[in-house]
Length: 319
Image 1 (spheres, rainbow, N blue to C red):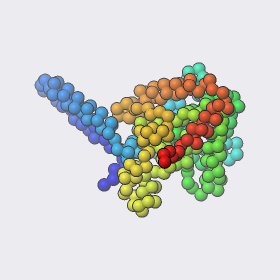
Image 2 (cartoon, rainbow, N blue to C red):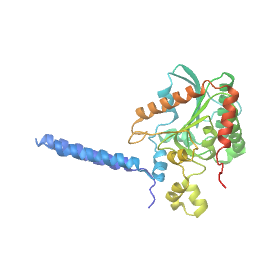
Image 3 (cartoon, rainbow, N blue to C red):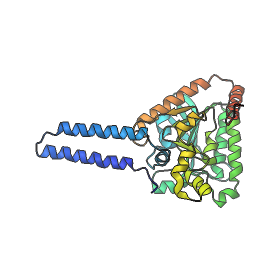
Image 4 (cartoon, helix red, strand yellow):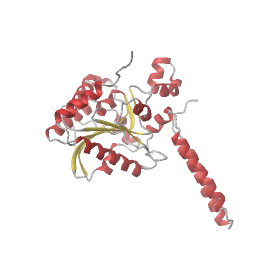
């Protein structure tokens, strides 16, 4: 049976609770089991570390979708000493699936855009499960053009299953909004750094992922379509998702090997949702490094190098 949720942490916590119960029994009955308990804890830690080093592509997909996984708002709160959220596309409305605004990062003003999924049921409904409408992408474009005007670097935080596919979104120009966002991202004359923190799905993710540097967390994924969608289209069988996750080469390690991303950030054992502080620190260091590399480049050189970077993707060499 195909796994539909990443349940290893639940199993680990059950074992951990049993060890704690054993420690309590040892204390109550005055029995010294400290050596045996230490051996058991070390064994559990080794099993956990081994598990996270050998996750299958499908398990990484499930982990990237975890409701406990940190989102854009969490990273913004960690990275920015000051934050002002901006709203609306000045045309239709404010899409809350997109969080966007101005942040102060190491004394440097940034324009920050990102997908917002929410964690509770009410938040997920409020943010439309992180699936943007056209007005969300137009809000992004408004902020990008503002960033270019005031020479602010752009940080993009990607985490979505895709753009919203509803009739209303199509009526308001979903496809053209995505295309225009892509064109804006690739042409603005300021540094753009994209961080894929969770699920990067379809055009809804790609619209915010184009940049001078694209960074992925080790348990994040990025693909043109979800394994479920690919399985249904190619095999007419949604149960083949594990095979499609493997074939799609959607993990950060796969994309780094294919030279489609610039850096892989290795998450601590347990993943970002188990150790946010250390994960966020690694993200902070990566952003700072890339900003320093890009800050001295002339605007026209930035755009030219960005254009050449994406023109090289898919190049075939050989006889």
